[in-house]
Image (cartoon, rainbow, N blue to C red):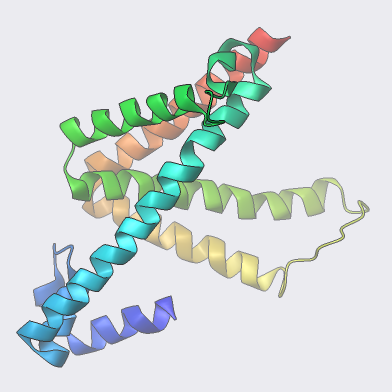
Length: 195
């Protein structure tokens, strides 16, 4: 569905009108349905974004809480308040969010998160190839559909997106990579501290 939707955006809208724009859905909707309907579609897209943000607000602190459970130095984030909510983890997520809000534009934050998600999902899928090579005889209760072709196509498409993101949005791309490097650094520091 996502690929079809993007295909419609590209077929309906002239490429020149899409260059450098964030609101691709709105631009395509104006061409397809007119100005009034495009505003309604923008509102619906905004509501979908709100539901996504609310899920991150709910899930994010629980991920931080799980990290606090795993590492002794971060135990302060593993604690719940009287209502059973991970308050300290929520405060950390709020702090990180405010840093991004005050130092970056909405487009930049989307690029930072998009780049980190592309890199982490690509590494995750590459681990399928690595594990098949390293441990070929391990029991696998779940097998990836279409392996190795679906996984290979996923990695190739993500690499292509990453290449063009680096080409067009170099600064944001390096910030995204910097976030991943900092995360790996923190992980190894915490791992050593736990020994």
